[in-house]
Image (tube, rainbow, N blue to C red):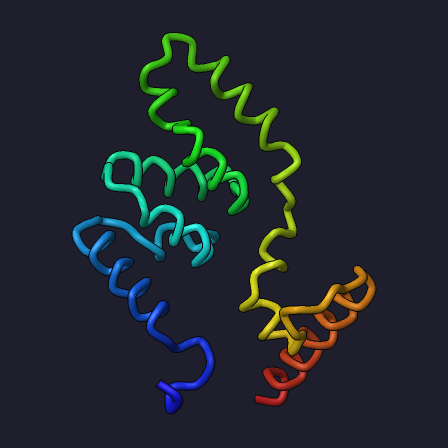
Length: 149
């Protein structure tokens, strides 16, 4: 495993296998939900009901659910409650109210892969100005490399 570098290990291999087994027979996957992160998929892979899997992928992708929103909705059986409810609007309104604080539009920046890409250590706190400067620096470097090509 050391030859493969960081990010490779027994847990990653298990999760990759689970991902394959979960989505191998589905007509869609990461290509149909590009805004979902690995963290989203790790939560969804725990489900055994294929209809619930499809529902959560679709809803999380279309509604830009954060990982915390998805986690809460799965753990509170949101899909099952919607199916059994005669007044779905009440269930939907409650979910939106309870997850409003989780719907951070910049949630993706908290993903460790983004921090690694930016060269920021995972275990540090950041002020917004530092993060913004680092992102802008990377964008400028990217653009300057591709203009020259």
